[in-house]
Image (cartoon, rainbow, N blue to C red; front, side):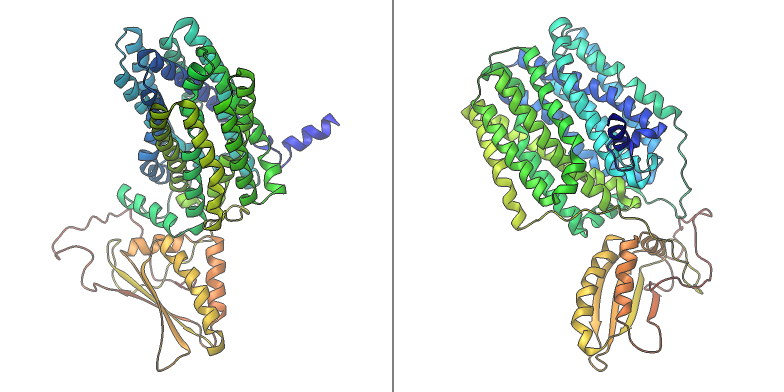
Length: 562
C-alpha cells in the first residue's frame, strides 16, 4: 500500500514527480532555504516596526514595501528574463537581494534603522525578488518535462509555503532571542545556497534565430500579448481582486497577534506558521482540485471559504481558534493562487513566458500591496477587527466577478509551432525596413461568410498578440466571394518575429480560416514594403544599425499563409 502511494507521488502526474529531476530538485531545495530566509526577514521587519511605532499604517506598509516592487518591476523583469540567459538574470537578482539584506543587517547591528530606513531596505530586497521571480518561474519548463510542469508549479508554491510554515515561527524565536538584527543576518546567509546552485547550473539554450528585442519593445510586446489574450487577461484580473481582498490576513497579522490576542513575537510567528501549514495542504491538493472541479468552481469555493475564515479571525480572541482559521485560510489561498499561476503558465508560449508570469506576479503582489495599504488605513480608522471583517466580506463577494469574467478552462501547455520557412524576397531589405504590409486573399462561399467572419475575429487576436497592428478584414463589393485580410508589422525583423511566435493553437486556428477558402487557386498572400525606398530611417544617409550578425532571409519558399 505504501509502495503504491509512493509510486503515485512520483508518477508522471504525481505532485513529487518533478523531484526525480536532479536540477529541479537542487534548485527547489536551495529556493526553500532562500524562502525561509525571506520569511525570517519579514517577521523581523514587521516586529521591528511594531517596536518603533504604534501606527497600524506603518506596520502594514512593511508588507507593501516587500510586495510593491514586484508590481513595479515585474514587466521589465519578465522582458529581461525572455531576452537574456535566465540563469544570469536570476544570479543578478539574488545579488541585489543579498546586498539589501546584508546592508539592513549591518545598519540594525549599529542601531541605525528607522521606520523609513526599514521600509527602504524592504523595498530593495523586494526589488531583487521581483527581478528573480520571472526568470526563476519561466525556467521551470527547462528543468522538467512538460507533463510534470503543473506539479512543478505547485511544488514551487509548496516551497514558499513550507518556508511560511516554519520560517515565521523560527523568525519569532530568533527575534525574541537575539533581536531583529539576527533575523536580517539569517536572511542574508540563506541567499547563499541558491546562488551557489545557480552558479553550478550549466544551462543549455539554443541560440536565438533572430536578434533580441530592445527592452522597451520587449515590454510592449509582452503587454500587447496579454492585452490580446482573453484567457490570461481574465486570470490576471481575478488574481488582482483576490490579492486586494485577501491581503489583510498577512498585512494585519502582527496587529492581530498584538491587539486582538494580546501576545508577542512568538505568537505572531506561530500564526503565520499556521497560515503556511494550510498553504502547504492547499498546494498538495492542487491536482485533486483540478481533476474534480472546474477552474471557476474551485476559485469560487476558495474565495467563499477564505471569506468565512477571515471573519473568524476578526472575532476570535483565542490563539487556537485563530490558528485553526488561518490553516483553512492558508489552504484555500494557496489553492486559488496556484490555479491562477497554472492558468498563466499553460496559456503563455515560451517566447513570452517570462513576461506573462511577470504580469501574474504584478497582479498578485500589486493586489497585496494595494490591499495592505488600504486595510491598514481602515484598521487605523476603525480598528483591526472591523478591517478584517470588511476584508472577509470583500472576499466573499469576489465570486460575483464570474458573471463578467469567468475563469477560462485550463488544458495542456501551449506549445510552440514549427518555424515557417522564410518568405520569398527579391527586394533588398534590412532588419529595419518597414512598415511591412501583409494582405491575404480568401474566396469564401456566400453561405459561409458569417462563420468565416467569426473565425477571423479570433485570427485578429492571434495576429495582434504576436506583433501585428492595424488589422482589418474587408469584403469586395464587386466580387462578394473575395475577402482580404490586412495587417502591418513595424519592420521586417518584427514581421519575422511575428511569424516565429505562432503556437500550435494559433496554427490550428489559421488552418480553420484557410479551410473556408474555395476555388482552384490557393489563397494569395502579398507582402509589401510601405516605404519602398529606405527603411525606417528619416534620411537616406542616416546610418542603419543593422549588423552582420542580424538574420535576413534569402529567397525561398514561403511556408504557411503569412
